[in-house]
Length: 218
Image 1 (cartoon, rainbow, N blue to C red):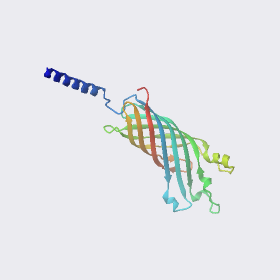
Image 2: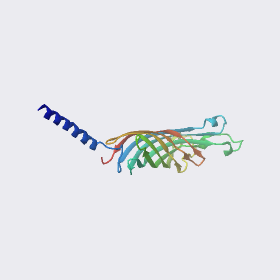
Image 3: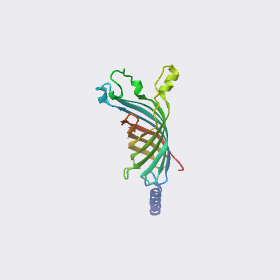
Image 4: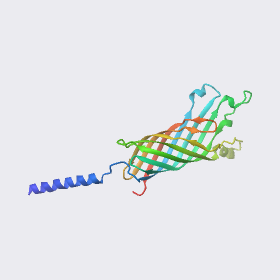
């Protein structure tokens, strides 16, 4: 009788192990997976060398808040799009921009656009180390107003037109995908974003925190 009971116990354990093995997902993501993410990010660029060669100045500071949508073609390759609110403060000034007799006013060289940003990107989860998350793409930045103009409305002080024109940036991502294979979860990555502006190109570096990625249809 003890042998029969022992045999049944072993059979149950083996059956449970096999069933669990079949049910366990093989990868962090599978083809046709879709995720909706809430994102928060910030970037900054400051040319320290410029500070020693006044009045040559270039800097950029920005934040991002919005939604992303990820679609997985394979368990390792996804496409990303979405919509962000992107406030940005930037100034690029070089001595050749004005004559030596003109009084320098940094406000004349500042742009403070509040943009709607549409990302078009591709990312990979590196095979065998799927928590490692890499990607690149293009951000389409559409200025909708100037933050300095909003200050002017409140203060009554005349501010320069600083909205700027449509511009493109190229985010390059390196970080960590901690999403759960069934429910979703968090991603955190570092981002280098070459930004192509009217006055020149800057290379801000920052972070992007995907606060939560919700799996759609799972």
